Length: 444
Image 1: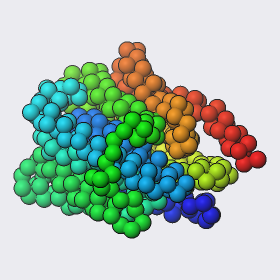
Image 2: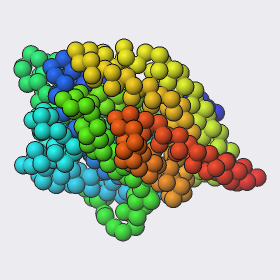
Image 3: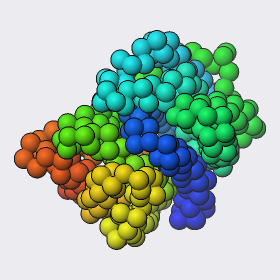
Image 4: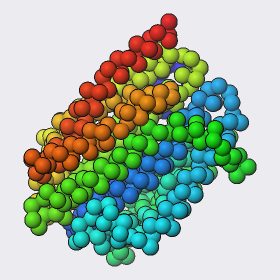
C-alpha cells in the first residue's frame, strides 16, 4: 500500500470495488426492468421503496466507512488490536439497529409507503416490494458495513466476491419468483432479500480469512471512544445517505404532485427508472473513488502525502472522463434507454427521457466533488467531507426540488438534480485547490 506505484495500486483496488458496485446497481436495474413488464404502478412501487433502501444504506455506510477508515489507519500504524475492536463494534451495532427497524416497520407497511411518498394507487405495490426488504434489514445493513470494512482493509477482492455472488443470485431468482411462481412485485422483493442474506454470509466468512481483521463477540466492546472514532469517520457518509433518503422522498412527492392528472404513477415510475440508470453509471465512479480510499488511508497514516495527492488526482481525472462519455451517450439516446424499462407507457418514456437528459448535462461535474469528499473523509477532515457529501442531494437539491417546480412545474423537478450538481461543483473547487496546496506543503 505504501510502496507500489500509486496509479497501478488504485486500479487494482478499484477493479473489484467497481465490479461489486456495478453488479449491485445492475440488479436494481434488472428489478425495474422485470417489474416494468408487469405495470407502471409496480415500477413506481420500486421507486417508493428506494427511499427505505437509502435508510439502510445510510446506517450501513456510516458504520462501514466510520469503522473501515479507522481500521485502515490503524493497520497503517500497526495497531491491530484497536482495529479488531472497532471492526466488531462497527459490525454488530448496525445489525441490532436493523433488527429494531424491521420489528417496527413490518406491522406498518402501508403507513411506511405513504410516508415515503406513494400515491394511493401505488401503495399496494410499494407494500409488496417493501415486505421482504424490511424483513432483511439487519442483514442488508450489516452486509454494507462488512463490505466497506473489507474494502478499506485492502481486501476489496473478497468483498467483491460477496456482493457479486449475491447480485448474481438475485438476477437468477428474479424471473423465477416474479413470473414462474407468479409472485409479481413480491417476487422481486423476496429475490433481493434472499440474495442479500446470502451475500451477508459470504462477507462474514471473509472476515475470518488470515489477511482480514477478525470479528468476534469478545471484541464487541462499545465505548464512547470507539463510537467517536466511527462517528468521525462515518459522519459524511451518514449525512450523504440521510439526505439521499430525504431527496428520494421529496422526489416521489413532487413527481406525483406536479404530474398531469392521471399521470401520477407514470411520473413516479419515470423518476424511479432514471434514478436507477444514473446510479448504474455513477456506481463506476463511486467504485473507482472507493478504490483509492484504502490507498489514501494507508499512505496518510504513513505520512506519505505525495502518494495521497497522486491517488486523489488520478481518481478525479478518471471519474470525470468516464462521466463525460456516459453523459454524451445519455443525452443522445435518452428515449431509447428509458423505453427499455416500459415502452408501453408513452408518458413514462417522455418524462423519463427529459429528466435523463437534464441530469446528464451536469453529470461530468460529479467526479471532482466525489473524489474530493472521499479524500477529506479518509484524512479525518470531517467538516469539509460532511459539507461536500450533503450538498448534492441535500443542501442544494432539496431547496431546488421544492422551489423550482413552483415556477416551472414538473420541469422544475426534472432539472433539480442538474442544478444541485452544478452548485456542488462550484463549492468543491476552492476546497480542492486548498487541499492540493496543503498536501504539497506536507510533502515539503
